[in-house]
Image (cartoon, rainbow, N blue to C red; front, side, top):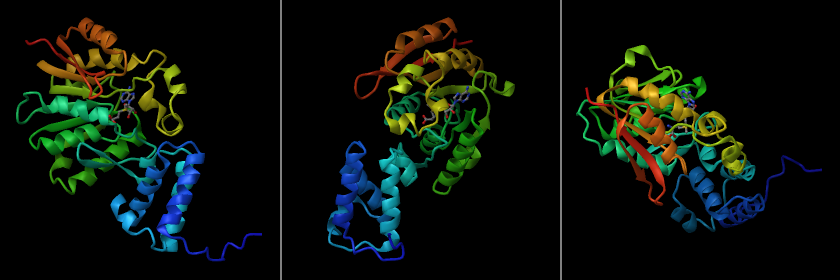
Length: 299
Ligand SMILES: C[S@@+](CC[C@H](N)C(=O)[O-])C[C@H]1O[C@@H](n2cnc3c(N)ncnc32)[C@H](O)[C@@H]1O
């Protein structure tokens, strides 16, 4: 029988990392050593370089216990970011948990595309399907004159976005006043938003049902399915939100959408049929078409 009160033998940083790496490797986690180091450095409040210096140090029980729990969670294929609680996005720390999609690097490109537009200093910008709130937060931090609105269907997700805005406001005072998070369906946005926005941006769910089954466990088993899959074709969200956004934009306003692999042509077609003009597609850093930009007709 295991005596649970018996203290464990002293464990050095090096030994704890070694053991965790073996455990994570056996569970199929990619880059197991890196994952072990990120989990431990998060608990110790140091960077990975700091771990190297501390290799011979004995880990205190109040760090070793939480580290072992974190390794068990990661071995269960829970995403690293849900365990550490944060993902950096466009230079801002965004709190994440299982209520929200973990912000992706591709979406930083969508934010860059919005920032590169010539919009008024006091532009109004809307994010459809805001998730963690990463897009309006990044835009609000970079453009202190803009007013941001964010729409989200899930009440739990919306609460997470609101708490992110409030938390980032502590470092960027005034953000809370400029970012509103609203509950609702992007197919039926609030009537008072009609013609109100200089730009509408969205990274909607775009994974097909079939693709979702083949995703790695970290995504398929842990991230919210409604953030990933809009329906069997993967195009359902675009079909709903592209015509809806046309009614929300000012004449000549911009629509910017993140798209998945192979979706440039069908999304372009949906935008054309909804009356948009000047439709263009931008590649991501890997050369994959990733952002569709279109304009509502000028008055
Ligand atoms: C791909 S996630 C994007 C989240 C965040 N913008 C990001 O880039 O990390 C899509 C988000 O849209 C929300 N969503 C899905 N269908 C929606 C709908 N019909 N109306 C509003 N939001 C919706 C999901 O709950 C999810 O938070």
